[in-house]
Length: 318
Ligand code: CP
Ligand code: NVA
Image (tube, rainbow, N blue to C red; front, side, top):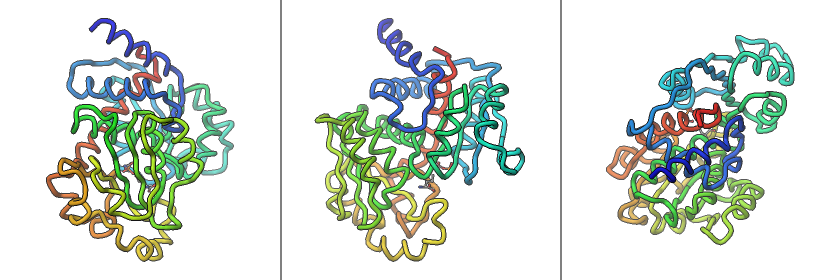
């Protein structure tokens, strides 16, 4: 028990001061350690004090779960957040990232940033001397993937060797599921219509991380994607920033709704996940999201626990 605890602390101490720009910024062991710490924080077996620490939130896109869960996570750890929305800072008037990041590093202890371009996030991380956390970009959503795999772990006890099937748009959420799945030994199938596949560079990166430990597949048929899987996952067809493509995407994704018929092709114990917000009747049926297999609200809750674990690690609680 003592050696288990100390190895967890050792793994997490390696994250002190680190950025999380991509799921690939963590090793498999660090990812597992964060899930373990999140589970301990959730059950009340462990408490952490981040008193005096401040997290800055720079969100240039809408958010319910990520914004609120980061805010509540810091409050529960005894710290605080400051909302740095570009419309109320000089960022909105064009102050360079290089200056903003260096100034904010003198005031706050970490930044959680939601924006469009991964490159902008990387630029903040380059100039900041504090940890920078990806709170969603067009490329990745690593905090979401941590919560997703914690939810899978809760449902099945362990996760290595399970199969998660993602159907829909090969987007930011799919990318982080592929990378984190590779690190955790989860087989990930991503099924998408032609033209909406995940970025081939991300798939290649994830396969490199997986080695022979698990299979990462990109498929073009929804039934083949979900057959026998232990977790079915979907996300909106038009992500933030793609609203003008909504009608075109609804046409392209016809037949890709995660509905009762698709769910019946999965493992009989399969759980249903969705990062939310969801569009019932589009990417998921109302019956499936409200049905017995759905874990979407546990999954949303788990954002809070994994982000507490992440903040504790990067802010040096270990
Ligand atoms: N899943 C997720 O990131 O939700 P928000 O956009 O509400 O933060
Ligand atoms: N893919 C979605 C996820 C929202 C949490 C988006 O980027 O809008």
